[in-house]
Amino acid sequence: MANAQYAILRFAKYKGPEISGIEAHNERTKEKYASNPDIDTSRSHLNFHLVKPERKYRAESERQIAAAGCRTRSDSVRMVEALITASPEFFKGKKRAEIREFFNEALEFIRQNQSPETIISAVVHMDEKTPHMHLSFVPLTEDGRLSAKEIVGNKKKLTQWQDRFWEHMVNKYPNLERGE
Image (tube, rainbow, N blue to C red; front, side, top):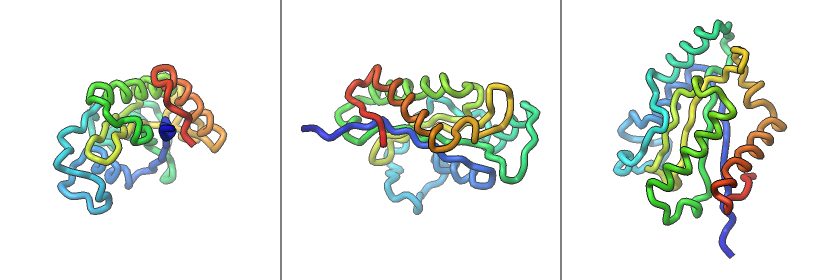
């Protein structure tokens, strides 16, 4: 019997200074990545954007926050990053176009659940062991408040995100199981 193939969605929240490091990793601005030996820089040219950043991540998040008229504190979450992938077995034997289609479908899910205007970047890394997408967005609510807690929330809310992500992806990829 084949191994189970999981749809994977994880979130991380960032408050400020670390956003530059996240951007350097996602956009592959460094020549060497001592912190991540899995990156094969000879394959970095295979990486691709589904949403290309117009500005630096931190500058774009501050621009959106200011445009929404939000007040911030030093501990305010200014950016949320979703890591989207599937089990390594899922990608085995898939052509580049099929991999791109998987991530386009995942991007569509995020756009249905978070205002598309808040998305700073969606970049797919093909230069590590398993293809995956880093999707960064500003946690602005529909009524214009800055609230990662309301969007990503607590354990219950994260479970709902996982459920909805799997329900969305399984329509097109019926072999996928819900991630743990």
